[in-house]
Structures are given as structure tokens and as C-alpha cells.
Image: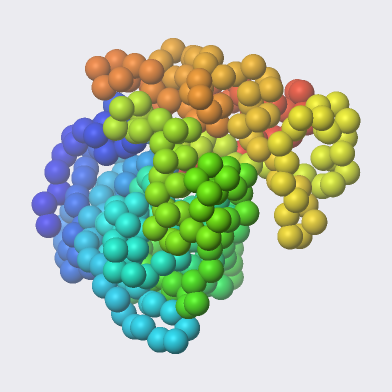
Length: 349
């Protein structure tokens, strides 16, 4: 495997932040990684880079950067219960979703147009419009970056939570199971259930049904609607650098929500199955007056306060420091007004 030096990372992160990797290697297969780990160029620590769509780079990366480019899409098995579909970790997520629908295997349509790679999807437990990755996840293959051992995990072993998984946690002791910085995901499998049932319980989708008069949409129609909705709300990273939703939607107790409603009756909130209440982080940020505000070339998107953007473009990009300064100012503002601590979604490195 070729290990390159001083590689530009600006085209490899959707925020378009200018930074460099001191050492860089593309992993196109499991054999590539095995060979690299056995050779003289393997020096810890390493940093695994997928699609770069959930990342804020605050400086040059000194660790060996492993760019995951493992390809491949296939149907593993078809049964009366559903379709078991596998993808290489380097495949583009949205293109993979579109491909499953083209093959006649619905189930991922609500997750259309989420940026990033398939391999990164379980790390974040991506979700949108009433569906989370864990709802369709079957299993994954990975390689232990300390031992070189290949292993597989099912859904329970991945420890999925809201935008969370075992891949985001460092083990606290020898007995705990955290895989942050330790695993490179190579392949992911999804079980798309039969019979297919549409997930439509979101206001934006209800509006689409009312507008079109289509009240029993098929999976392709839902896919098309969600693509249109996301394009209307969110900036295209190819045109305006960003990392998608920058903050997680916070959850509060019913009592906390009632207290906020008493002060701000228009607060956007959703009851959760466990009895907690999820608040719309974008609404909280907007209510604090941040829409359109900036720090240097990092700004809050004027159409959606949940998204931070790179206003400088490729020639004068924002820095990771500007992004994080803006993010921390927003966190402080929301906490002072609502008593809620917003948690960033992207990985900060």
C-alpha cells in the first residue's frame, strides 16, 4: 500500500476546511489494511476517515489517516421476512439507498440524501423522518486496529442510541466495550423487512401528501419527497461547505418541557416512546437569534439554524477554530435562555 505524506484534506471533508494529513493511505479492501498493518508504515495512532461529512478539522492531523474506500453492493439473501443487503464501507450512502430502491428492496427511503459513507452510518446511527439506522441494521464486519483481527457485530453489540454507538466511546476499563479509534468498519448489512410499511408520521411528509393528493405513497415516492424536502431546507455541501445538522436534538422531561412551554409556547417538541420530550435544536438556536450570524467565515445557515456553514468557499475557507467558536457561543446562548446544553453531532479532530 502507498502511504502518502502531507495530503490535503480540504476536498475530503464536506465543511471544506483546509487542513493536511501528515500521513495518508487509502483502504480499498480488507487485504489493503492487513498489508498496511503488517508493514513498516504502520504507526499508531490512526484516524479513520469515511465520507468526511460529519467532521470538523481544527488543525493538521498528525495521526495516520485511513481513507475508507471499500466498494461493493450485493443482495446476501432474500426470505419471506425481507431482503438482507450488504454494502462496502466506502460506498456513498445516498447512492446505496437509491440502488436498493432500484432493485425493488424498499425500507431505507426515509434516510435519503443523508451525506456520508455507508461505513460511517452505524457509527452515528444516522436517522431522519421517523427511521433510524438501527431500525434496518442487521450486522457489520470490522477490523481491530490494534490486533488486526476481523470481527462482526450485530445490532445489540453496536450499542445504538440517539446518534450514538459503541464506535463513539472509549472503553473506561479492561472490562468495558468501547471501540472509538479502535475499529475500521469494512462492510455493513441491512435487513429490509417484508411486508414493507411506509413511515409517514412527520409534518413535512403529511404536507407532501396534502399537496399532491397522494395518501398511500410507495417507497420511491417517499424517497423523492424526502430528497426534495432536504434540498429545500439544507445547503448542498458541494456548493456551501457544511457538516449537516450540527447539534443533536436534546431530550427533556415532561416537567422541563412544560416549564419551557410556559415561557415559550411556540417551542417545537415531540413526545418520545420512553416518555421523554425531544426538542428541536434548530428552533432553540433560531429563538436565540443566531440565524445568519457568523464568526469569521463560519456562519449559521440563514434557512436552517441547525446547520453551520463555510461562508468563505474553497478559496477562503473557514477554520475549524471559527466553527467551534461559533458552536460554543450558540451553546452558551441556548443554555442561558433555556437551561439546555446542546451537544454537537460532528466529530471534532
